[in-house]
Image (cartoon, rainbow, N blue to C red; front, top):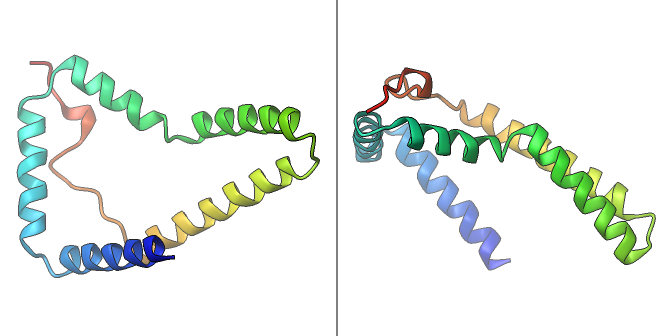
Length: 117
């Protein structure tokens, strides 16, 4: 319970810092510019692979593997409905938070614009 409350407070503080255009944006832009300047083909590829691990296809494959493994291990018909409920709820929550926060993508840092060093 304490971790959930702490996470909520941290999220609120970060949202406040982003909305009030504090120094956090300056730091973030500086890191993005440094990363863009020092990017290589390899680092861009690795970051793209890591990013895709959170994509819908990778998550679906992992959910199927988890569902099969847990169904075999637990011998329960409730494993698949549980995974569907958790993943559906997570997707609804994530989409809602992104819409409420009006998430904005940084303009100067677009991975497709990276040049090989």
